[in-house]
Amino acid sequence: MKIKSFIYYWLPVIIYAGLIFYFSSLSQPLPSGIPSFNYMDLLLHASEYFVLSALLLRAFLYSAAKRPYMVSIIVSALYGISDEIHQLFVPGRVFAASDMLANAFGASLVLLYFLIRKHTKSYKTKAATE
Image 1 (cartoon, rainbow, N blue to C red):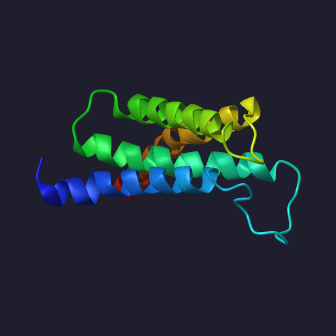
Image 2: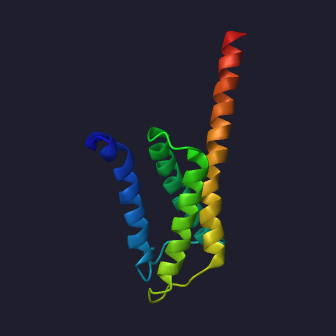
């Protein structure tokens, strides 16, 4: 793999995973005073792992991995599990199964997003040719 390809495809994955780890290391990752709502934490987890899964998918597609969609979802979900285990050792943070489910859900939304995007593109192409 060329260094340019590594920087372009894999470095964003590494940096983003590092940011997840960093914010998980903080006792209070969000600044106080931010308005919150029910299930905000779960929405943040799902969003965070949607991005991680999308970055992984991009890298796996470039790498010509077999089943890149499934691999990106599985790797993201496993990273989410390791993130929750990591939080066991951070004062003020807790291990939460609901967060793990939100992480896996967010990661799997990448598949839905790309299926919808693919369907929309094919619909637009059909409409343009008719």
